[in-house]
Length: 432
Image (cartoon, rainbow, N blue to C red; front, side):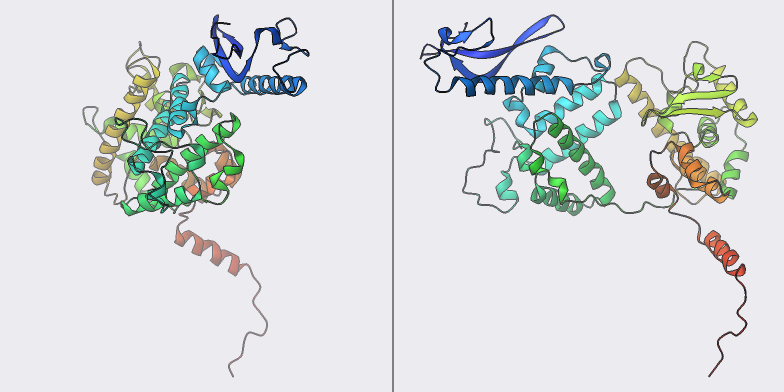
C-alpha cells in the first residue's frame, strides 16, 4: 500500500524474509485495494477491475511456486555460503541486471568466494575478463557479421560503460565460434580456450538451473569443446631416482622443492594445493587421512618409512602451525590462496634448478610428480581402476589422459610378448 499508481492501483508483491531481514519482490501485477483478499491471499471473485479472476489467481500461484522452487535450488548447506536477503531475492527473481551474463557470472564469483572456492572463483573471473576484452564495447551484430545499422540492445548503458553487455541469449553458437577464432588468432592454444569454454558452459548450466537462461538456447548442444594432448609430463625411473638421491643441504634454495616433489610422489601424486593445506591432524597412526580439495574425495594413505622422515622434518619445524608444510602462513581463504600460489611459483622455479642439476631435459613442474606416479604405477602393471582410485579420479577416462604418453619401447615389449605367445604357423607364406 506504500506505492499507489496514478490509476489508483497498488503493486502486488511477495514478501521475502531471510535472517530476520525482509524485502519485497515485484511480480508485475497491480490491483485495486478492494479487489485483494488479504486473508485468502487471492484476488476476490468479485473483483471488477480484473478480466479473468481465476486466470490471475492461477498466475499468482504459478509465480509463487516458481519462487519456492528456486529457493529449494539454493545450496543444501547454507552455512557454507552466506547469502544475504538481497542474494536470495536475486536467486528468486532474475532482476534486469542478472539478465546480463557478465553480472550473473560475477554474482557466481562472489558466491564462490564466500564458499572459499577461491581457485574456481578466480578462474571464472578470468573468463569474464577475457570475454570483455573480446567484446570491447562493440555490438555483437557488428562482430558477428550482422547489420551494424540496426541498434543493438548490447550497446553501452551510458557513455561511461566501455564493454558491451551480453544476455544469455547472445551467447549462441556463432558467438562461441567467433570467440574461438579471436582466441586462436592471438596465438593462444586450444587447451587454454577449453578452460574458458568450460567456465562459460558451467555458468550457463547454473543459469538454466536457476531459471535465468532458456535451455532451448543452450549453445553447447552443437559447439564441442576441443583439446589437444599435452606434452609428456611423466619422468622415467632413472630421472625420478636422480631427484630422490640428489644431496642438498638444508640451506639450499631447492631443498624444499626436492622434498615436496618426492613427498607428492609418495602420497599418490598429491597435488600442490592439497599438500599446502595438509594438516598435522590429518596424520594419525601412520596414515594420512585427508579430503582432496578439488573433488572432496577422501584419501587414506599409509605412511612409508621414507615419507615419514620427510613429514617428521616439517611437522617439527613450527609447532604453532596446524599445517605440515611451511606454505600457508595467513588466515582467510583469499590470503591462503595467495600464499599457495606464491609458494607454488617458487616451487616451480626451484624445480627447474633441480632438473638442471640432475640432467633432466624435460620440463619439470609441480604436476610432473603426479603424472610420474600414474605412469610408474602403470608400468608396474597396477590395474587401471586402482590407479584411478589412487589419483582420485571420478572416471577412468580422466586417468587415461594421464597415461596417454605410454612409452613406445614398453609398448614394443608388450607387443613382442603377445606375438611370442602365439603358436608358429606350420606352413608360412611361400615365395612365388
